Image: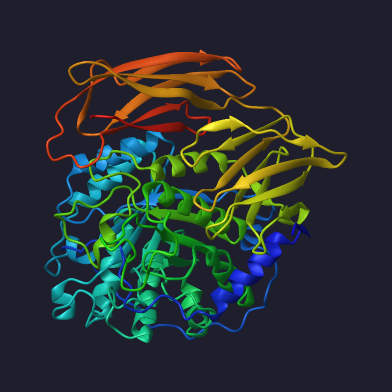
Length: 599
């Protein structure tokens, strides 16, 4: 039976997943997180002040938080990455990460400042590593969002997760850090997952008091700084509400939550939208003064040898989950829901790289498989998904789901989120859960000159549509293992780079010829184009991996070729891989993966 829904698929889906989110008690308090074990720290000195009484009740407000804070309906949240860089991280490692981020237009990053890393002994500070991070961030134009966390043993008498015995010590350290980097860092997060036993063994009331003292130290050191509540893992409205009823919220500019659905949280990814709307409601109830951030979110591509177990809380639901491709799909499903709330102003994905398997981490093995890159910086699908999404969602937009008409075959409705830019362009994201495919028809109001379908790694293909008096109709074949990302270009059609005819031809003596064509699928000239091969460690590019293309006119393509050779495959269980990439800094980058036949 064909079911027709007018502006209702989104509403039905949201009701269903909001109810799921509302009925859930949140991630278990002992949920593992991805942050590495802290190291050592050093200290400041400024006198703490008594905690004021809670502020009087505020007047509830209505409307999306981003609209309230930005005084307008069009908005583009920040999209960045996380990496902790604990004690022992080399400056070279940090610089290599920063340089690669900037190449792909990613300029926002959450980092850790473990108190124990910088004040290992009371009153003895060593800022060398943090100074280097901040210097490099300025060199590469990266905005840092540090979280200050984890007590040194001298402050607790032992466990770094315990509350400090004297909150004056905590105040002093926070004050000195913020004062040291005043004018260079403007956002400060207080602790990390203080409702998670892996990172805090004190009571929740003690965590609230720690945040109050820390946030007050931030404001005393820099009144213009933004204070961020340490990321919450328990995202139930009642738990979030205690931040306000305790009086802690009067010191806080941002409420921050973390998501690991499908890794340590068994709730479906599709519950993220409903969960965030409920949290936004709590903030609105208390006056809507705080922003809402998702400053840590991730999805591992790990599953145990039984093919089903992901973690102590999560099992695979479908056979297509927990692959590198689906990790990128999970990113797009998560990100589109987050931005569709119009409540969240910053999204920071965990993390840049997989951890090395011989490195230390808190929690289970999933911590080693969260990265957008392998530990050696070979890209995963996720890397290109984040880079392309950052470009697709760079211009301010508003959600327009209520303007759509959607038809679908399956009883369970698809998930469809649509966003309109100020110039009339539309970005549409659609998917289904389960195992069965579905054909859906979406009617979008407006007039468009071109429609492009994106893969999760930014490959673009023209998409046909039919025109009507009020708009256009798209017919999409939804595969539950994938996602549809559509860009409808209404006015000026900008340059849009992609790749075609990507292949590897096997020659003699372990030599391969890699061929591809870089194409401008847009309507304006593309300039200063970079085409490159990114090869895995078993491959070597005979000439330069990078080819510069001065320009490509609309519809123009240029043939590319590289020669590569195998360096040796001893111990290699999987086929050597390489990416062919084309980018220009304006169009979302496009990347195609090749696996070489070595038999």
